[in-house]
Image: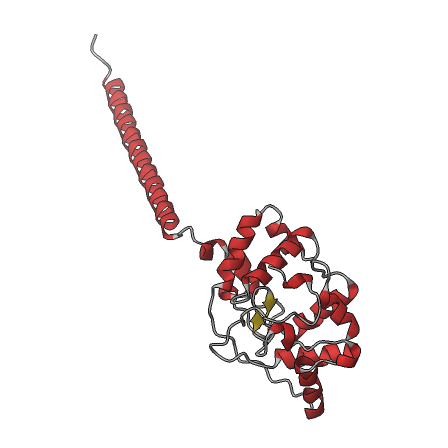
Length: 256
């Protein structure tokens, strides 16, 4: 029986369509495979470009504290670069144990080991970065003199030691665990004094800063905070060596 010409033509067309569909599918599959390979290669390249270093791991810190922990003087968050390692470690422990309260800090630190906290502290302490110029304060001359007197001389009759006795003559900090205070934001300093007075910031007993904050009047706190935030730390000044004489007060936070 002679095949129907129409049927033969339909079969040939169907075969051509099938071949075309197969070719399209294979081409699409190859394109998808190539795209997947390209994505994987880009991901591998990006992963290779990110080195596993402390600088990379500490990106969560610099979001708030500034590039490499070098906060500017017009923000709320304090600079942590170059602070004594003992001080930084103590603060990390204080946040972890609830002696200082900050939800973000507590969350970041809650599962970190003591050894890693010390590694973080050593990393930021090792950063030797210039300080930004301090902002002018427009303090009246009498207020500036009173503030500097509190910082450099204290008030012996009220058992208020001078700030420089613990924080160094240049107020750049003192090893092993006293921080520098110059160019810290005024609002940050005011908040810390308030936290010590209210008990929401604490340190190992005896808590000398809490005692000092309670002995200062609110006006004196405002004067000292303004004066400290408006003084620039000269280039090349670093935390001083540990004091050879006893501190004017027994201070738990002086221990690393």
